[in-house]
Length: 220
Image 1 (tube, rainbow, N blue to C red):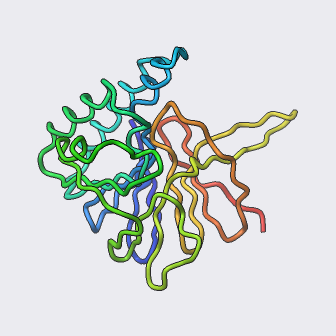
Image 2 (tube, rainbow, N blue to C red; image 1 turned 135 degrees about the horizontal axis):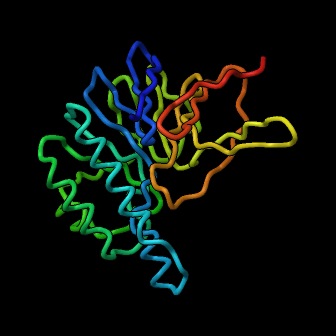
């Protein structure tokens, strides 16, 4: 069974879920970033082999999350769909239609280039960054300058860290990356790369290990 870890930010309880999403308990809101749905179909159209099963697995995880919490709103923090419209978009629309209660919002990212009619037909409202959701300010790109009084939740970087073991062994693991004024969510999509970050002592990093989220200790 997947087990969340709770991290407090601005007096709010953020449940870090191993499905690579954040459940904001007080706001009854789900945050996730960088699904990159349609990426596999985009590659296959270009003649590059890409597994079809990954998109199905991403949608199953999203469906499980939507059924796991009493959700009022869902915010996708950019790069929901990878590129041009293709058949994988229909699967997303069907999934969202099965969950009529939450309001679904997309903070536009650099890959969100579909015609607005596609988002509207799927029940998604489009938002430009930064979008204020007190006490958070939402964006796709991590904000370069902090906004006083708000904590930034962002995506785009696909954060990961490398954990070193004995005998030159190492693991690269996706993570939730919390800076003093900003958090970067892991890429939700399975067919994405990772950018390995070098944490500072004041940062809080939570790695995803199978069905658990574990905090790693930072060196001072």
